[in-house]
Length: 195
Image 1 (tube, rainbow, N blue to C red):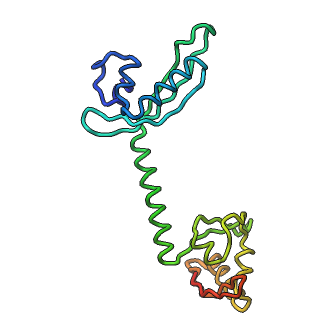
Image 2: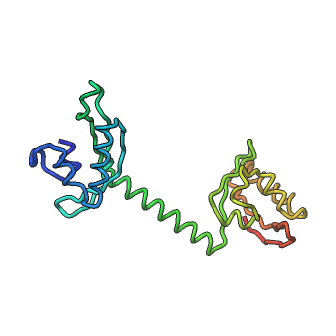
Image 3: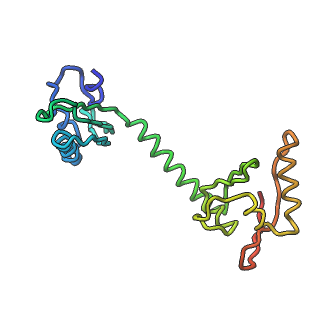
């Protein structure tokens, strides 16, 4: 019954068969599924695919189709187990998350806003923000980044004030980390930063 639902059909409305499954897959994706079936049956290659499945009501769905050959006599290679899961909602949420991430990166770039997190116990800094790398003049391949790496880029006259502001934010309830300071790049360029 779930297989019929995954294909947008009422239970029992079509005879269950490989042909019926393949017919419900988007025409441009059918050869991918048929190739996977053949490799599975002839060579025992398991597969996991994500395929488009247009429903009769006009909506478009994404199915994750998995298959493996059933163990048995090596001469009987015509049986395999196949399962489908409708992942349309998961894919939609994934795509929305990717778009939101791209929008956030673009907004950060426009605003020159870099974001990062630091674990004070390990000293490790984590960021996916291109602007954070730009502000602190670091290369994205210079991993792992440590809090000391950031501190070394802070102007020496400002460092004690920054460290004090961080400490207050962690020890005083309700205190925000709010500090302006200078970041010195290797070639002497100075950036004025508000964290």
